Length: 243
Image 1 (cartoon, rainbow, N blue to C red):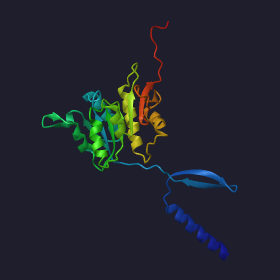
Image 2 (image 1 turned 90 degrees about the horizontal axis):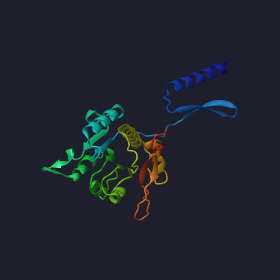
Image 3 (image 1 turned 45 degrees about the vertical axis):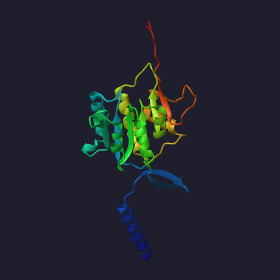
Image 4 (image 1 turned 120 degrees about the vertical axis):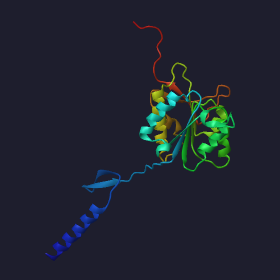
């Protein structure tokens, strides 16, 4: 009888400890030694809430595009001015100094320790040269270059990846660009880092499957830079009338 009371007391203490402990992660059932047990799988995904700088430049700096894009991103991430993580900057509007447009002002927007990534749309000339100055000072913030008008070789040097659309038959619509941007921002919030072996697959997941991500090949040298890719529509283009 005494042994039963001791066992019951120990059992109650166990239940009390379990009920007070917060368990996080996914719980799955596993079969071990013919007994069903619960296994807690700890989540390894890490989220970062630092600032994402979005540069809107050539072909992507119209008030309509910017307003629609930010309205879409505001719902999920919020703008910096409202306590969110998106810091939008517009070229040339935000780059005026002494009556002149200076791309070097970009460094002031991105050099802060709270900046987690920089995403550029239609980067103008000397964007890469401006960021290279920071790189040489030890600045390691990821840069994702979308549809640049800057020189490609410097862009490849300073960027984690460069992405272009070379499909003359189809332009990427605004809504698809909003989806792409949102997925890219979500990717920057994880602890995962891009590497050459997985970069193409990561980009394909970010872009979605209406477009195929292909390696860029320099037409003059035949060289394929490891971090430069182009988009090709997966839709079939038909000409003429089918009766």
